[in-house]
Image (cartoon, rainbow, N blue to C red; front, side, top):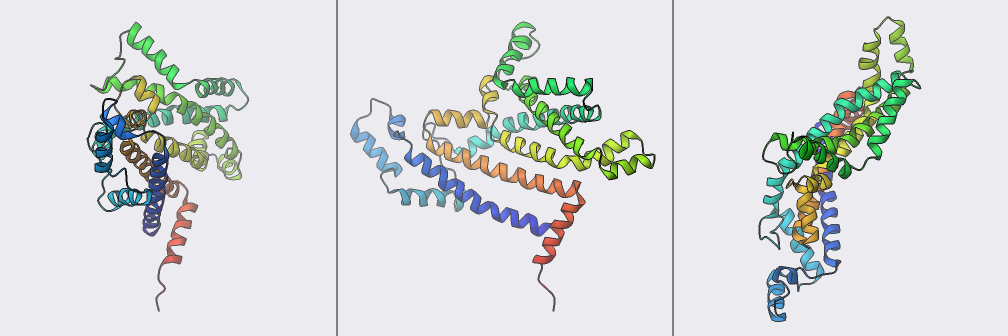
Length: 320
């Protein structure tokens, strides 16, 4: 297992290098001059050329790419924002806890509600509870999260005055963003759990457990659910990894200064260094999350763990 983890971590290096080259190339060929944005429209051509020379924008593509990769791989530095002059890594580090809070609690809420809802629908397949659960899930999947966020603000902040509408000054400021962000996840997880449970609920080992007199509760939660969790974990991992890159719409609606809001503002301001650093950060966090998902697979499914251990034995040096 340790060999597998080390191998996956080493494979992240070429992935991140590839992402770095891709995002740098895209930013290089994007129309617009960041120097003119930095100096403003009142700057003279001589001032623009002087700053462009100072920042290295007059250098060829390959030289600028090499300097960019050297800064990331050797100096571990994302650079400074063109617009604000602050460290991109420092900005991401300060904003990450807010994004992590929204993402983590959204996933927890989606899991705690979505999985039982899907199990209940599978147990009562083609019956009233199933139809009701799937109807509610369909509404949740179809509902735009920005519209839901605005409706929650109107109801709980403007009309009832129970919760704040924007900001991040306390734990209560995160209730509406988490709920608005979790509704789509609840619906998606419920639908996936239902379909996955229906595949295993009539399997031979489940029938055998029932024939041995195992309670229906134990059959569902101890025998059927663990074997139905693999696709659910895949969905949760992908969703969590994506949200760690910033819940862009939610952060914008509730004015939460997270990673997503930082990335959007950087794109709007043509702050190329901040965009490049943000994308690399998203790629790194997503890779880490998917590695953790693979490890959870091994914990839940002994067959996958045995496969990992078998690969480790093949890679181990043979003793003479």
